[in-house]
Length: 250
Picture 1 (tube, rainbow, N blue to C red):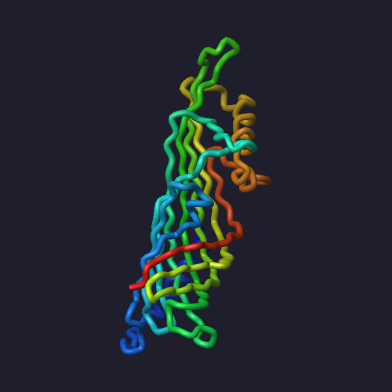
Picture 2: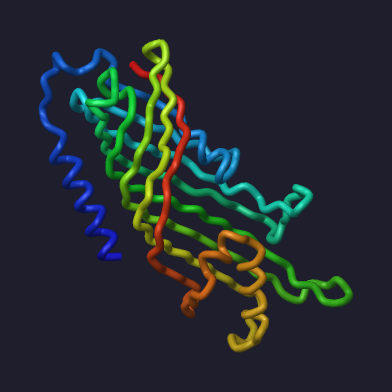
């Protein structure tokens, strides 16, 4: 965690050391962009909603921030039918990211925010989900109830490459083409039984295996790693950022 904090701090210092007073005569008349990030809607779930703001701080440089709500779409089987593992579910999440962009002077015809760019970024994603599951006996009676609390947080720091199109002076399409990062994953899984059972009961292991393999992404994260007795797993990993965003330049 300290290593990640150091990397993010360096990025912040680098960003703010580059935000200086600029010659306003060289800045474009339209220095602001408000945009909608469409990527979380398709990758995370259609109910996700992330807005962004970009500001020109120098003729060839901008600063931007994205903030929004994430909601994971339900799992589906091979036929596209939703898989409901837990009842009484509540879920949500958040998306926060910042970046500093350097637009290419040589390749771009116009000043920022139009054209090819690169720059450092930092982001934070969190997805959480709560639910319950009734355990039944052979006759259909409830013998126990499990309350499940799960949360996945991802901290990222990296460098991105993208291209932004400006049409009719106001409409923008922003494509973050690639953004490799150093990432820290923090997975927290909590299980609580209405009627307590022996902690050494093999049922715990069977249930954890079921949770892992009911979600391919979760299984990939946990593979070859060991969750602590508190139900928490924290580990570094490489990440990647990409996005499709539409906006209005003013």
